[in-house]
Image (cartoon, rainbow, N blue to C red; front, top):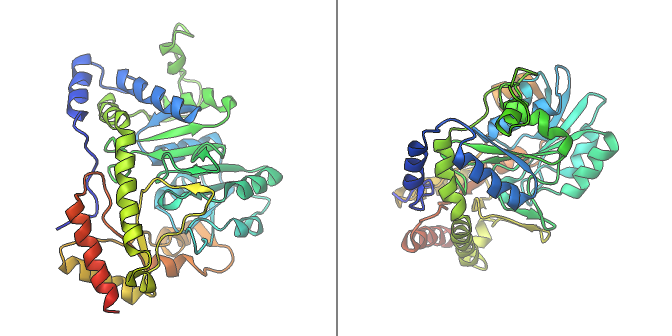
Length: 376
C-alpha cells in the first residue's frame, strides 16, 4: 500500500534527541527549544514561542485576544475542530461563513455581513498552504476593530504578496504535527505580530508566571502573575524539530517537486476533464502541503477512493464541515447560505504527498488516476 502520509525523517533527529538527553535538560526552553525559536524568529522576523501543538497556539491566541463568554468569532466551517475549540473554551459563539470555490479558503466577501456588535475576532485558515485574501480581511478587521488570527497549520513558509503566512494578522499559529511539512511529532508555534503582546504571551505559556524573565536574568525570582497553562514542548520534541529545520529547504523542495509532478501530469490530461485541479491565486505562493482533486460529485469521489484502494494506494477525503457536526450545532451557527462548504467537502480527495515518496510510487498514483479518468 502506498500510504497517504509518512512523517518526515531526515536522519539527524536521533542524534539531536540523544544530545538533548545528554544535556540533561528535557523540559521546555532547553537548548534545542532555543535553537528552533531563534531559527523561526529569524525566518519570520517576529517573536515566536514554540508550543505543544497548533491547538495550544490557538488557545493562547484566544487568551491574548481576551475572548470571553458571549463574544462571537467568525471562521470557516471547512477546517479542523481545533480552530473552533480554542474559542469555544473561552465561551465564544462560533459564526461560520462559506468558503470560496477556488481556494476553499474563507470567503472574504461573506465576513462583513456576519459581523455583529459581539464579534471579537476573525479566524482564517490557509487551506492546503494557500493563504487567504488577507488584504481584504485585514481591512474589514481594522474598520470594525476586531482581531485576526491566522490558523497557518498547513501554511508554513507560504506567502501572500511576499508576506509569510502567520505574519499578517494579530497572531499566527503553526503546526509541527507528524502530518505537516515539518514535524516534531506533536508541536506548534505562536507567531506574535505586535510587541505589546509578547510579555503576556510568555506568561500565558508558562502557567501564568514570569519565568521567562527569570531565565533571561531580568528578575531574581519568578512568581504567578496571571492566568495561563503549560504550553511548552519538551526539548526532546524540539531536538527532533531542529533536525527538520536544518533540512527545511530540502524538505520543501522535495514536496514542491512532488506537487508540481502531479499538477503537470494532470494538466491537459483526460483527468482534468473530470477532476478539477487545485487553484492557486497569482499573489500566493503555496508550500505543497496538500495535493487534492475535486470530483464532480460525492459518488465519484468515493468511487475514486475505492478504486485507488484496490490499486493499493491510500487516498483520503478531508474535513467534515464543523457546522454540521454535533458540537458545531451546539456552539455555532452558519451565517448566510452554505453554497460551497458541504459540497466541496463531499467532493475532495487528497493524494499521497510526503517527503520521501519514491518517484515510482508517485508514478503509480498518476497512472491509476489517469486510467480512472480515461474511463469516465
